[in-house]
Image 1 (tube, rainbow, N blue to C red):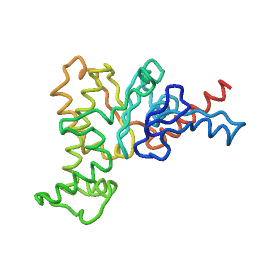
Image 2: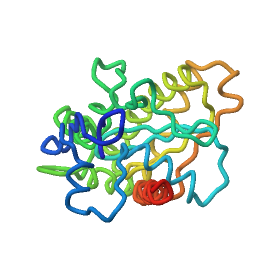
Image 3: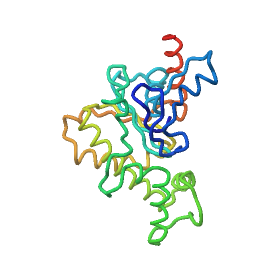
Length: 238
C-alpha cells in the first residue's frame, strides 16, 4: 500500500495518493472475501526493497537503502537482510523529509512537482522547449531524452533535491549502498551530476568513499515481486 499502515500490518492509515482506502481494516476485509488465502500487507516501498533483495538481477549487500522516484517519493531500508520499519512500523517515509525549498522532497520531485517545475520555467520564458499546454511527467521525460533544454533543467534541479535527500538519510542511517527505482529512474543520467555535487559538498569522505548509488534492477516490477515475497512468507507462516 502507498502510505502508512498499522504496526500489526492489518489496517491502512494515511494513504495520500489513495485517500479512499485510508483508515480501513483492509486485511480483515480481504480475509472475509478470500477466507482460504493468506493475506499480508506492507508499504509499497518496503515491498520494492524486498523485491530487489529476493529477486534482484545483481548481487547486492544485505544492507541497503531503496529510493523510489515515481508518482511520489518513497523509501525502504534493508538491514542485515531484514526490512527496517522504525519504531511503530512506518519508518523511511523519506518522501516527506523537508528540503531547502520549504517543501517536502515529494512535493518537489514527485510527478506533480516535475510538472510544476516545468510550468514555472515555461512561464519564465528563458529556456527553449517543445512543451506547451497540458502535459504530464512522462512528456517531460520524453522531452529530456530528446535534448529539450527546459526538461533537462528540470532534471538538473531534481538532482539537487535527490542529493539533499540522500545526504539526510545517509547521515541518519549510515548506509552506503543506495538503489534508485521507480518510473523516474529512467532519467537518472540527467539528474545524477547535480545529485553528486550536493552529496560531495555535504558528506565527508567517511561516507562518500564507500558510497554505491545504482539503479535498481527490477524497474517497476520490484514492488510486485516484493509483494510476492510477502505472500510466500505468509504461506510459510500459515
